[in-house]
Image (cartoon, rainbow, N blue to C red; front, top):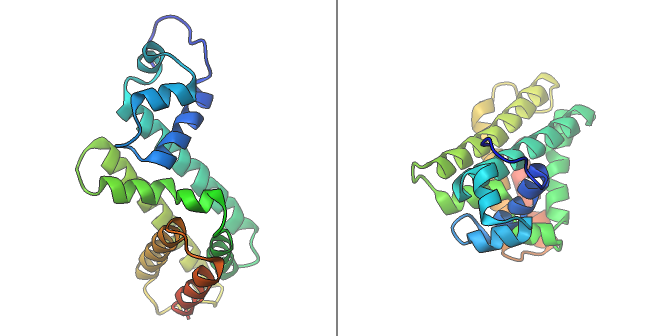
Length: 195
């Protein structure tokens, strides 16, 4: 943030509201007007606190990534096994098919799809966020191998890529309106690939 007058709003709350706009509309479609209305701040406050739309997006995606990975890490730690974590995550995601959240997809995968490999800061941040998910899956696979639930001879990095790809596909399937039944069937096929 820049120096100047004290902010008359909560930057944390503003980022949370901006995140909802980016999540629903995407980076390119989210107008500054939409962002200002959601955050309930003026254009000058946006520039004072965040610099510009790009910087605001980077803050929002970074926060989404950190919150998601921390929540998943806590779930992994609390799970009876790493395989139970992986199975639960995929099955819970499939059961969530009819929710508003499922219709939004995942901000990380949405952003990676939208921004591709443009080489700018938003696309690089999206790639970093995808890598964080892949790293979490890699950790879970290694733990499941240590626990004897996944064959230790299998390539843990490749399985992490497989799970990341599968979750991205599942979130896209749900975003496109797939039923819980169809998503659940797809998930069982994904999980079979771990054995």
